Length: 625
Image 1 (cartoon, rainbow, N blue to C red):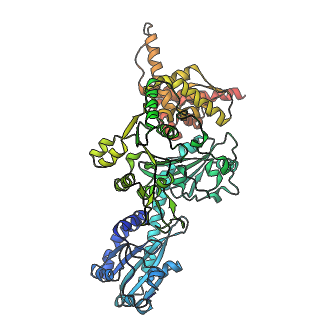
Image 2: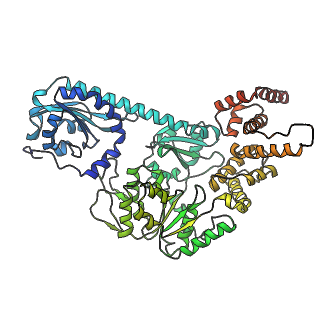
Image 3: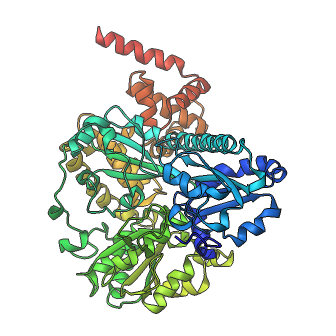
């Protein structure tokens, strides 16, 4: 370090500063209101406030505009690093090194350029786990020295941490609101974690269920889980615990915002962790291509035939279809039918990541590219798909500013990792999928025309389940068989009335909704028979409503009213059936209906069903006696 240095090191370029601010948006959101509150004080004392990331790189500068220019000459500006390694003894770098408040005045600075300044700084810690999130500093010319500067900056850091804590708590509450219904309705072990993989809540079954998956010691010791978002997408790093390959992980979203994840361990069967040599990718199992797609209806066969034909050429394919129709199964089938079948099949959901995380997942990054980056860097999904197939699901959700970089990869056959200057050659087959109208997104400016025509060289529309009702019996039997084996419940069958209900339902969630409905019904079935009351309420209600209409028509000749049953009456009938089935147990009835217990209380009062509860409980009491 040169003690005669006149300034700090050169700053990052504008794009890198933007990415840095995005990665630290949580910290910037917390300090934003406080900057406005302290601006007048800073101007009056001829000082500026400086916010940095954990590595000492400046994120934000605010305060007296009269000293911003001389600070700029020192390179005390966003994008510049002021650690002790880059700037010698200075308040920002020394506070981060010691992880405690410091005040560096005038000649106490190491570099000559800083000796006419006085600075006080401290660190900002995560209130959840105590990790250092950044530093905050107040700086001014030496004559503005005040013994109150250090207490002021410590107080400000405390207020920032308080705001971070409140913001984290609000996110955790929203996470719980979006996941507790599942957590309370299942006998599976469920662990809810936030977007950083930190444990938020578990249900009563979690400890035993995760122990069966191989979690040793206390359940809490297994958290936090690094790279939880990537693991949820199927990219489990080699160093990760084996039980993460067995547990089911579901993303909890609110709009486009990922609040956290649910880790689910089945309580019905005993699973043991798989060894790495036991875990085989789908493409290496040598099963016939497209064999995972169940059905023989004309619309489905047409789509499969087109996919088989296009698999022979190495052109990009765009799969078009609603959520849940099986776009990934088609993508795997195309891969297995192609000349790249022996190469990797790499899938990435563009809608499951924030902008900055998607960038690193897609392109990879070099060592030290950003805060929290792995020491050895990371290969992106594009590189991982080399000599194989890259499947981009929900490609319409790819942020607009990432699209030209991805287009360049497709045009040049080269990928540039974040933080590197040398491109790497890649050769992969691209399959993209979307449930959006990409032409409409082009019209509103959220999708690039040139990328669209590069992706949609050929396209395959996949029919929704309502357009291939002839496949329903085969699909029902397929998922019933899988659920029997998975939950170890033997020969479960579907009652005729329940089967008719399933056949008449519109299935807006397509095959994914059907699978979930069958899994839930198998778990709820009594005596090995799935009845209409075991199906989700949204499937039951239309059938009950239609049945009530049929009954009104058949009794029209009798001296009774043949009026059509309203939707409210159909809902009341569903609730009455659930109350009777569970003998007045509202907790179980609410779980069956798929609503919160508090909501059930409201509906019972609304429809005047209190007497039905009392009757059901009296019957139970008599039976027990």
